[in-house]
Every structure is written in C-alpha cells, then in structure tokens.
Image (cartoon, rainbow, N blue to C red):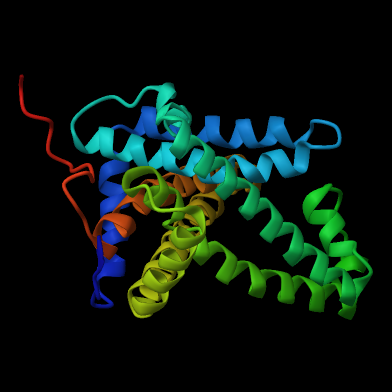
Length: 266
C-alpha cells in the first residue's frame, strides 16, 4: 500500500463515479443507506449507551456501504448482509474495527465536550441528545461560536476516519496507524478532496434549485416540502457510494485489495 498524489480534477471524477454507480443499483444502494441511517437512529435511542454505540458503529457501517459499492461495480445486487462485513472478517480485524469505532466515538465526544466551553453545552446537547433548534438559540453569539468550532474540529476528525475502516479491513492496518494514514492521504490530496466536497455541495444545491423551481412553477410550496427530504437522502446515498472511489484512488493497493473486476471462474 502506497499513497498516491492526485490532481484536483480527481475530485469531480469521484462525484461522477458516485452518481453513476448509484444508478447501477439504485434500489439496493439507496435501501442500504436508509438501513444504515435507521441502524444508527435505533442505536442512539438506547438508554445510557445509545449515543456512544451509534457513533461506534459508523466506521463499520461505512465499510459496509463501500463493500456494497464494490458489489454494484461487479454487476451484483448488494444484499443487506454487506453492512455486517466488518463483523465477519475474523477476530483480529473485528477487534480492530471495534477499537476504531470506540476511538471515533471518543473523538466525537471530545469535540462536543470542547464546545461546551463556549456555550455551556447547548450545541453539544442539541447534537447528541436532540431537541428543537429555535431562533433565539441561533441568535446567541455563544451558540454560534460553539457551532462553528464544533464543525471546524469535526472536519479533521472526519478526515482521520475517512479511509481508516477500509485500511483496517482490507489491509489489516492497526487502528492508530489507519487513522494516521487516512489523515495524511486526505491532506496530501487536499485539492482533490476540496473539489470533491465542493462538487457534492453543488449537487445538493442543484437538487434544491430543481425542486424549488418545480414548486414555484406549480404554485405549490407543499411540493418542495414533500420532495426535499427524499432528494437530500438520495444525494446522501450517492455521496456514500462515492466514498469507495476516494479510497481506491488514494492508495496503490496490494493483491489483497478488492477490485471492480469479478473474480475469475473456478
């Protein structure tokens, strides 16, 4: 495994591949993404450990969606069982994935804990426990500061865990090294990932413009309200479909790394 330095234009290629691959198996990939969201939501409502458990399963579930993308590229219909891929890879890699999940949850809580220094915990409580975001809260400078700091700190946390599940699963890299390699890969290819992020922002914005335009033409604001959530979830599913390609292209892989080509017939 060796890091590759990519041109900025690769970011747009990843976006295109995510959209194209999603439409190879839209029902399967869309359904798996909704299952992923439902799994995290159900875990989060468990008493005491719910919030930590929901965060801890994110790396493993993300790997499952990457495997689903690989299955779609091979012309197969990804089954729900792919979401459990991380838990069927042997004890050593299972333990590594559990450690990775625990580290992600800890990192997230540390970020949220740091924001409490600025607003007394309002932002952290809203994000972790839930609740209603009101205008009064948004107008508070302390809350705004905590929100910006929280989002700013989450970006490097996200980059640290971007490739980590795949590195742990497909290359057997220890969790701490996987986090380090993931961050380095993202930073070394900063422009490609920046274009990638901007590309997905443009896709979300375009979808919103289309829905708003349809609503205005038909004179029915209710249409926009009804279509906006499905649009956002669909684009989010496309986004997660594209994550596999960022991993595939950021490293020179070994023979152990899965490819898009179907396995040879036995």
